Length: 206
Image (cartoon, rainbow, N blue to C red; front, side):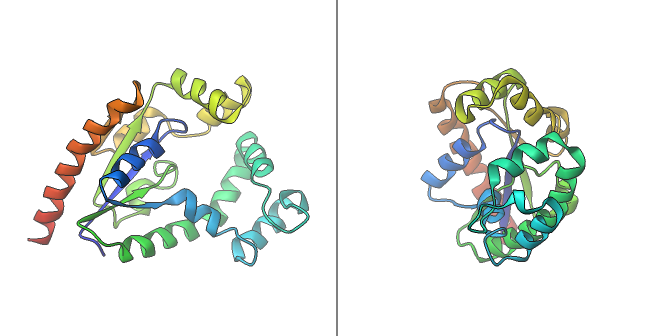
């Protein structure tokens, strides 16, 4: 495995993707749990069959692909459904991420895991060396959700409330990026973190 695996996590609409993109522009490899989550429910994957068995044919389009919008709304509205969905997908996502991180080149690899706090934290990912939390005030998360996804106020609040609290995410953080300003403010923050992670990776190899 690459000497250092660093998780990027944070609440919905906190700006995790923007931070990950800053690292990618510096030439760092980013392994993305959202991509892995899509891959494990592709047609022919065991997880898709389990989802159909649990949630019914309504969870699928007529061509057999997953209806993500319906499933997301259903899972966010029903905590038991969300737990069942996570039990099906999370173990497979974790295994895929670990394999991809192990194959990544470079001094360190970023692993974007939106639901790290909700999915067991460090105990579920013992191979992570460090956790970087991207944080934003809840009111800003709601505004971004409504603008980005077109979610109404009620759904946006459900989506934020369904996730870990800011305090729970801070509790697992080694580093925190407060993303409450303009997008261009992220680059210098990421540059400082990149320098830190390069030093830590060199120390780990020594």
